Picture 1 (cartoon, rainbow, N blue to C red):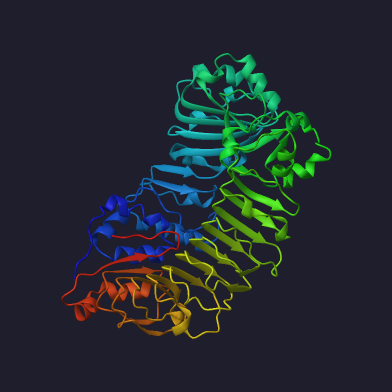
Picture 2 (picture 1 turned 60 degrees about the horizontal axis):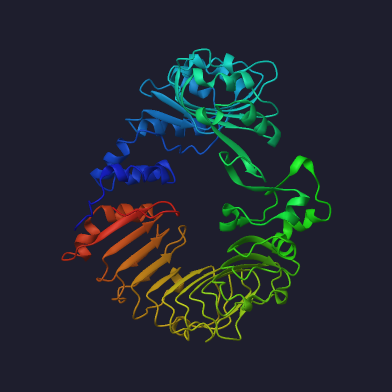
Length: 537
């Protein structure tokens, strides 16, 4: 039996926070000494109680066990302050980190925990706080609404050293504090303002503002100082902007968003008849106005309930449509990536021939002409008929959908992923023989001559017997939620991944399984207790 010890424990320790529960951590420590050492070396708690406030007896019990399980913890991360922390205050814990914003009124109950807090995020509304009492504070983020005082009073000790200070001013500007910034020993200062007028007032009235701090604003608008950092992709419009626009900012060119809250309007100006159009059909109105969007390449979340004129330069399109025949996408030779969401289950697919990556949610897929698609993902499809019209398709993923024709005629298909799919054909004639990777439920498996990698999903509450011992071509095997089932492996295996299969893992970890079935073979295996990542060691 051969284990793979290539990864040092410092990397294995990065895996621990992604485990799903304390039970999985216990199992992880049983894999080998290196995994146990990785758990013991962790410095920050993963937060398995999974709650904002540690209030119930169960949550408190999980939190205590978590702290005890990691003996070398230096810091604990919590979301919100809880009175439980006042009673359970482990002496070996040197740092407390508040990972999300808390209300400043809670700090009056924090007691002797002040000296342990290193990271703090606060909403302050006319409460006084003396940050000089937080002896180990390193980073602080403040969302402030003060009417009778200044933040200067909150930082009375100008010699207090902080690594990072962020202040989000709401409904006011603290000029006294901003003018005092050169006096403080803050490594990094970030100031954020809520309105365009307050932003421009500070820039014009404080000469050193950019040399001493980073200025942040919520969105782009015409004429904004180029030194201001834009926090997101909002774009402010005025009615004059629409007609005088000569170009789009580079950030908008690269990835344009058309969400419900992505438009901001100057001084509350309503755009009259353009309001609805701007929100839902921005590309259409800009092309038909004087705006130049010929450089636009990526359109995301476009609402297609009306005819939309798109730029010829478009290469990627994500669109929700109701009447598909209104979009003539075949004329866009540069369009390569297409994602369509159908509002009606009876709508049929409209795959342009030049598209190589295609994703569809809802509707039907019944191709009547040849297409060049190489990668395809289908979800919630009421009827799928690909037949011989996808000669170049190599990767196919299908979720919660129904096949009306088998896939056996697709001679180029290499990778197939099936999740909650239905078909009326026998498995022997459903799959193409060219597959090298197959992911499916255990009862959908069928031996294929070229299959190299196999991913089987089980029902963790039931016991099944699956024999894949005759599948001699398979070298990589993944078993998902295989807890009570029995699987007979082929001798050709070189690696096994166990996804959320803790009981199966315990059986394998004994070593007797492999020593009996694989006395002359080297086999590496890995354990995955979560769905988002795979860990090899």
